[in-house]
Length: 63
Image (cartoon, rainbow, N blue to C red; front, side):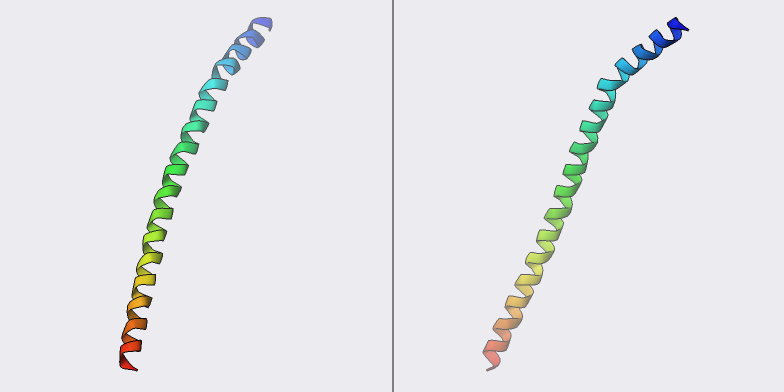
């Protein structure tokens, strides 16, 4: 039984840095994914702003 507990503690000691590394990698990939989504949203909002500006210019020319 003592050998089992010792081997179990060895596994958990090995798993701790592995799980930390996996967690850090997932956080990095999530932030990269989030940055890509934010950039796409910014481009979409910029295109809406440009379209609204063009519409406003066309309306001001008609008056």
